[in-house]
Length: 316
Image (tube, rainbow, N blue to C red; front, side, top):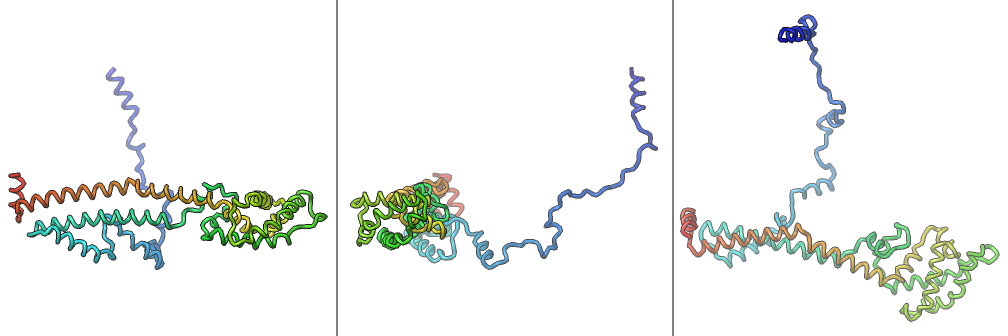
């Protein structure tokens, strides 16, 4: 068996003449990045515009709880003096420790200030009109959603509605020129037009006191949205449904107020329950507690050097 294995092995080995030297080949990337072919001067080195440079300059400024912005240094210096005045350190070790205590307390103060300012902004800033449109089932196109945040009172919208309604009678078509559907819609406008001029012309209108009229006006406005009367045909022709949107907001002001309150509560809870903020406050409070424990231990032991500090902790 051994001799037969040698014969098989000998038959499988190539002779020296059969072996050809391999030519060296250069490895080339199949998809070489285009930027490698550019001149060094043409490669990106950061923003070039003044706006981009101003924005990128803020990259090194981190969260207020972990870094001091230049504008707060004077305020921090006053705060640090107050901490030093209360703790009254003596010696280099106590002074250094009190400096760290002051900075840790300042971090906690900045985090809390950030939470307070963010919470106040929720109450004053406009909510997302897209979110508002979703909660209130806004029935118009997305291009009209911005009007949900237009700062107008019900009185202002009422005056606009009164002006539009008084001129809407001129838009009605003749019975001979329109189909039956448009004629029926225009007849409903004629029925309430005079009453609408009187009701909307008042200085202040309580919608519940004129509920029957506003229910009839709701039907007219809905038919206008669906182009089932002359008002809707005219507004569709000029491609502007602003007046119909304004009326919808006027009629749904209570629903919009409730939706805004819901959105603001959600944003406030999101800020107050942010795990990153909780973690930052917890870490800062823990560090402050440890630093104060060490400081009062040093203060009680009257330790002023590293050797005394070491011995003080050993004997404690």
